[in-house]
Image 1: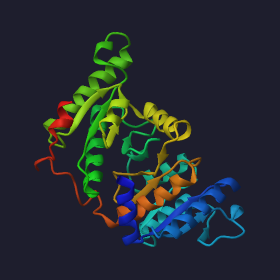
Image 2: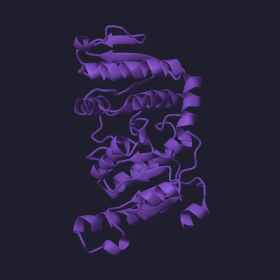
Image 3: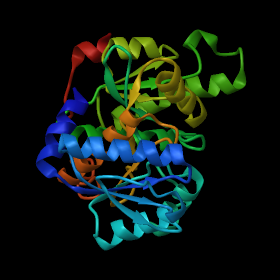
Image 4: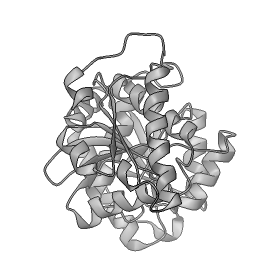
Length: 299
């Protein structure tokens, strides 16, 4: 299991992780409880950063106040004061904007670690509504995801989804594009030797789960966000946070309305990824021999 492996790595790492706390009492309470529980599990040393107007009355975890928590988090990370940061319950728009400015990038890529109600864990992207629109963006997600799995010593099993089955072409031009794009992604991923363990599941996400795919790509960011929300908020699944994979520091995204379990998972994920080689120093080598799994590819 991916998360269990992360817990073991995090306990050995005990990285210093800062997590953001939002500007509502319910956000503060959930963030503080998650931080304290993560500390009890021994997966990290934790600092909470939040607005001075929303400071908890009692807490066992260190709490830093700041009028601009998202900016303070990034300054702490850039200066080396902390090893990694977690968004926690901070608003998404400002947090993403600050990351783009700090790391001088127009596009961000996040890959979420999810779990089904029956316990299957997998990385999933895109989850941002403006992400994963083009074939090249999807290939970049696959490259990042394969590197992420390899950092955890897991063989990639990649599933590509589209908006319909191959036989549905002609019913809707938008769906047609996702179907064609999915096939292009599979072909180019294999041709570039990013991984040979990739399969086009069309719209059949249930088959991708049944065949134990550990990296699944949605047709686009909007559908990906809906899949994430349906699984977590309606389907009794779980999320363990989403690392940003195209920046040279460890930052884990979370939903501001995410359950406490998601925040504990994100802290664990942050601590563990600090211990492994960062993707900026372990770029995927397209010329190495991929891990083969003929049964997976031929199903």
